[in-house]
Image 1 (cartoon, helix red, strand yellow):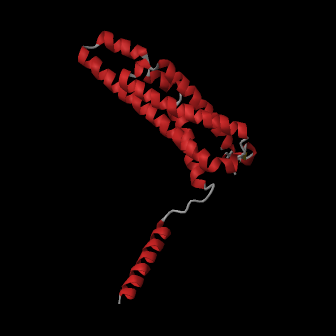
Image 2 (cartoon, one colour):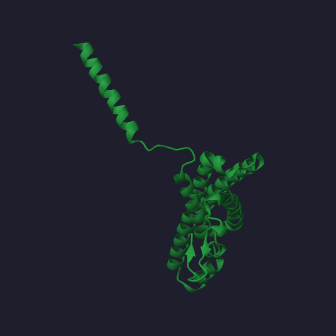
Image 3 (cartoon, one colour):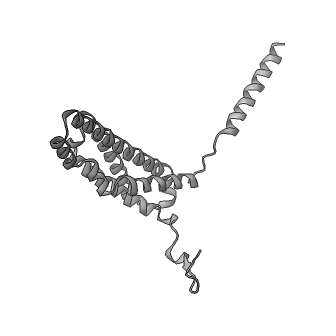
Length: 192
């Protein structure tokens, strides 16, 4: 009787483990999902978070000076608090996108990018320094406000742009070649 209970429990355990293994998403080495996610993180950085105009506007001292000279103290304080939250959100989003790109490089890029050892080493150092800079930037903005981190923001955006350029090269094989999209001579429509 005890043996029957033991084998039934063992069977139930095996059945449960098979169920959980079947439900788990398979991780294909070099899967397309990782490529798409890396491309999305790269696009978010390049077009959404790193444009010079956006960064300059988030950390613009002119806005602070204008509000300080034309608004009452409660509005000035509210402006500082809101700008601080915007700057913190920006720094966190940059850090999250960089972490996403780093995960791509750690897991999948080696298979496709054909990076040299030296480039991989430089990239690893860039990722480490950039993630550290993002964390320090968050701390500085949190404790001293967005206007205390001017030079740090510039160096962070330059380092992120450098990583974006290397990632762009690594993901270049995902872009269709220019000759692959032809224009029909009569209609002017694109053919692929």
